[in-house]
Length: 498
Image 1 (cartoon, helix red, strand yellow):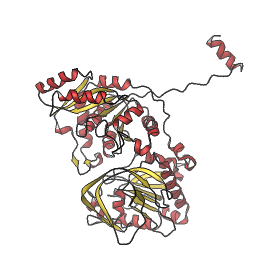
Image 2 (cartoon, rainbow, N blue to C red; image 1 turned 90 degrees about the vertical axis):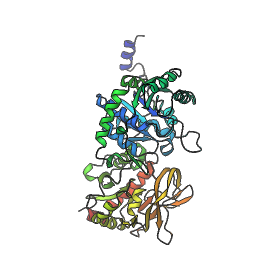
Image 3 (tube, one colour; image 1 turned 120 degrees about the vertical axis):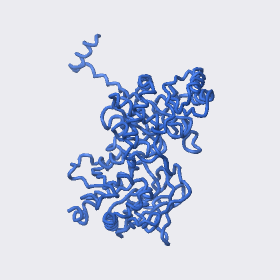
Image 4 (cartoon, helix red, strand yellow; image 1 turned 180 degrees about the vertical axis):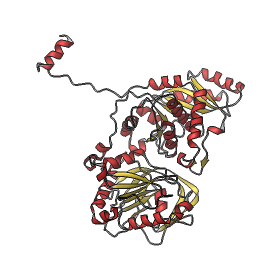
């Protein structure tokens, strides 16, 4: 029987239609990794994103791991939100779906560039590489480009690349970019040694401090805090286009196999709590802190809020005189309030408005910087005062993945809820005398505050050092969304919104 005869029989009901075979997602992509921190991953990754975009391609940037700062530079380079891929925060099964989603959420993507974290095989401590760049590259079947600082080595560069390329089966190292090359003689020695590895050199970036972002106590200065950041990224794109073979980079990206994973969907993740069809004009407003002092939050957080029938509205605590009109929920993410403490303190009108709203039972979630802002003071500068505690900079960096358990019911979850998260701060919080209910038990240690300022019988304020990725734990968004809808429906909320 010919294909035409079969089609006719099927149309006439004589034969059952054959089910369509699932098709994978075609997504050219590559990972930019390194032997360790400090080799120029962000420089190479951001530069490639910007240069490819300048060449007329639609580019989406991703960061492996929990980092918030690098995605800000990715966003500048691509014109799209930067996104994160983290097996610990979101679960292994969600990594590829989040990649597929991120590559389509803001329009079709011609090429995705994934920036790695630390060294290629460095992941969660004690986890044998779990949540490492190599782990994500394997989960997404993505070829790897190595950024290698050769300023203090010659032939050893080949040994490092050879080791990275052969250490773990399933990780495909497809190219290397040499960073901070010195003289021509030095470069020839390095390049000659690399020939024996079979890994092609795709380009050489010379020593040039003008294309590197400045750093401070928690890493790079966020792009939103640098007026010159856009110009720096534009310059970086020019340098990368001059010194890296973009055609070869694209050939590697296009060699990546199709992705079989379905795209992650915010409404599907929320399940029964999803209300994506609520008209925008009818959605309760969630005030979301932004601006220079609050630059940390995952892109999927806003998407989950919208899928829950809410409208996230960004406000700047440095300049806004009040919360957005119709506010029925408050989300204060991470950032650097310690750097901007004096300016935040000077905005007394907003601090007072937030304090009154929180004391009236406004559902409030605050992570790290958000918690500091809600304290009575940061380094002596007056803050909102909704939390009976003071915060101060300290000498010790607290950094790492955490497993958290909710010790009681709150606006984010019920007692016993277990989530994964990440801690990243150099401040300490000292509560006033008298025990306050904790927001989480972080690996068994109480952290943060779950408070009931309005004495409603339920904790409406949840503040902690822990950063959580709501795509990995959508029940947090669902619980918060339900609380915001309930607050919006109450007479008190209607009065505030009028």
